[in-house]
Amino acid sequence: MQYLKLLEEKVVEKFNEEAKFRKETEKRSVLLIEERFSYLMNELVKERKNRNESMDNFQKIIENDIPKITEGLKEEQNEMIEMDNMLNKKITDETQRLVSTVMNEKKAREETEEALLEMLKAMINAMKNQLETERKERQTTQEYLIGLLDDMCNKIVKANDII
Image (tube, rainbow, N blue to C red; front, side, top):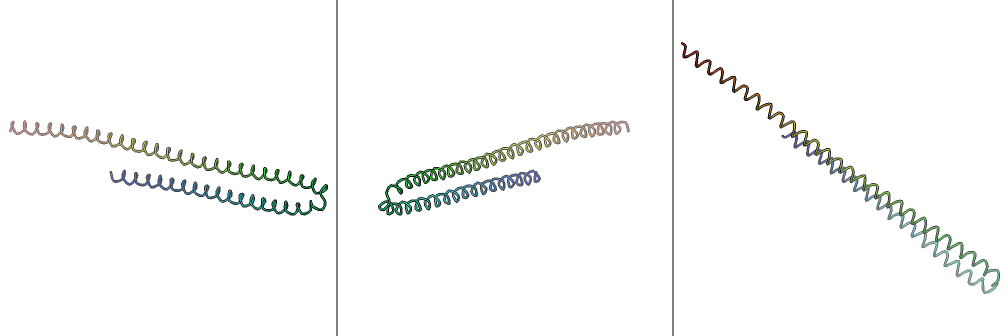
């Protein structure tokens, strides 16, 4: 019985360690997502700041050479919009990939937990069956020995009666 308790404690400990490991992995993944998201947002802010500075410089130049600058400005705006779109797409793709990774880790952790629980249940049932079989064997042996003792006692009583 002590062995079962120790075995159960070890299985629970392993289960807790696995859960802790999965949670830590999940936390690290979330921190990585937040870090990358923050980095991309900083890049986006820098890009916007650069764009705003460029727009101010262009405004000064436009006052001097309107026709050439107007055409250049439109091209620059289109490039910036395209770049913003590309950055937004990268952010979205990276976020989706990281969310998918976190979900996969979570699913793997849940599947591992379920497998450990099933394994624990199977072990407990096997141990119960072994204990039940052992109990029945002991009971059968005990009944057999009691029968032998009864027979022996009866023979001794008969032998004493004869003497």
